[in-house]
Length: 200
Image (cartoon, rainbow, N blue to C red; front, side, top):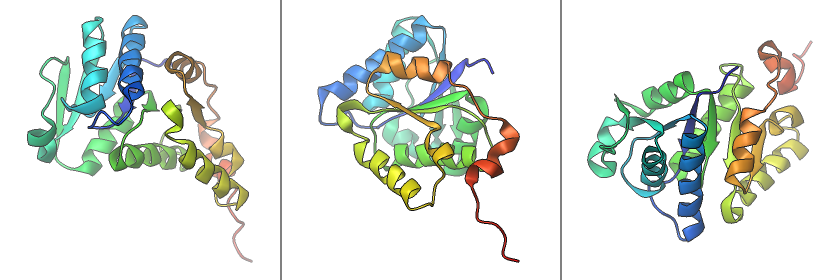
């Protein structure tokens, strides 16, 4: 699969550390330099604005998938290439899943975590078969990765599905991991669940 469009999930706030903004800027530049399209939440606030502005400033293409009810709060970045307005969170997430070839998650809040888990579950259940990566700036997602490993140890998540989540603290390294990821057979999703056998 050729990767052309990558969803970037990130916060509507800047966060405490300047490192978050720097990482968002770097992602935008990397995408533009590689001719990759940024797909994001459309907001003109926080790290969302930083990623989109950075990509546009370096000649990139950016598509925003905005939620109508949040448009007044987040505002749609007026400089981006295309804006898609959705009317519910479900519609918004479905659009992310359908038009994106891969996904990268930067630091963010509950919304970013919801989007991360939506992609993971969709991969687990064979709805999609696309790379997902976490940009772990300042160890932001350390606790999440500890929980994910714990879920494997306690046999609720398979090691195969655990290993599909790519992670790095370096934007360039993570993007390269995404672009070179070897995806499993899309029809093997049930085997990768390591589901309990049906009772006899």
